[in-house]
Length: 285
Image 1 (tube, rainbow, N blue to C red):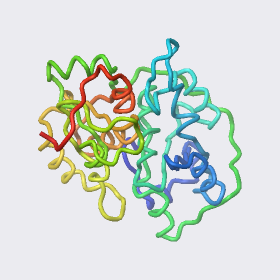
Image 2 (tube, rainbow, N blue to C red):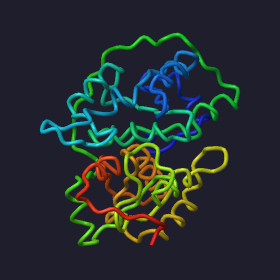
Image 3 (cartoon, rainbow, N blue to C red):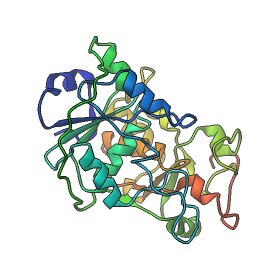
């Protein structure tokens, strides 16, 4: 069973096994149609497509009208329905991939763990890693049999905006922001209406988890780098702009053997929507 990463070579050896379910997670935050178009132009053999906005996110506003962020989690029931449509069972080994170093695939990885499914891994290096070895892409849609996966005990932790607000005062947990350093500082903000970061949060850009070929750094290196940010993963909270790239940091922690950190799904997009919440700017303290 693969529970964090899988190499292109290993996937190629196993791709014909019936329990393997491959999910294409490609997306573009500036063009919501880009992922589907890329999938139709060529995807890994047998891969099914999932959309960040439509299947990996829920309504942006709660029942009372409160803004929940740009990519809030869907209900577990809605998510399970989508997973069944993709043919996923409890016995499935799910492989998620994108073309962005795992930026979007990690969201599916975390969400499957969220509903209790541990047999999920991200294709290390994504589509480029697959094609550079000479493995082919195909354009025909796969034949999918409806899946039977159900909600089981969650394998991950998530926190609410109220939890984060309390932590600003108590400072019990280390909050880590996965956005680029300039957005963290409050500069060049193009995604959200307000720039800055949650007071006390540290900055670890998710791309710092990757090597120059967009594959993850070795486990030992990740462990060393992350250990300079906090000493206890169970006392850490990952966030980003909208709860997507924070999952990349959580995947990196899993690879590094530093399990136990929580996700704040609403992240900066939810936090900054309420002007009563405190905001910090500038470099990491």
